[in-house]
Image 1: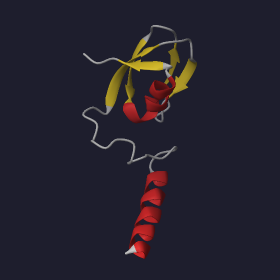
Image 2 (image 1 turned 60 degrees about the horizontal axis):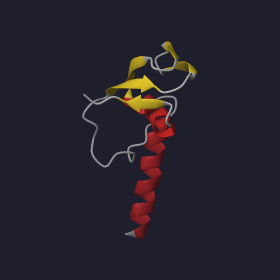
Image 3 (image 1 turned 90 degrees about the vertical axis):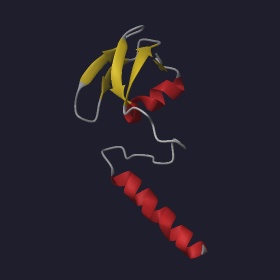
Image 4 (image 1 turned 120 degrees about the vertical axis):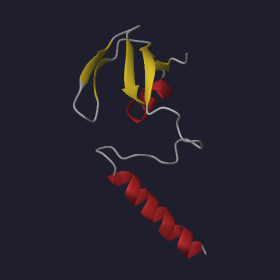
Length: 86
């Protein structure tokens, strides 16, 4: 059983690294997100932000953007962006 779990963990980690340029962490959320894109407000002047598809936007204080959750979640955690919930 332990060897099966170890192999499963290696396979899952390999798969998550293979998604996109930066990978996709399937263990981030215990529940699947309801939305793939979220509306966010920039809390500070951050500068340019480039999405995986090459779009570049300027994140300035109080600007509002509609971004892919997986690509901006780290900035939400850092306090650079605030997730706007309506």
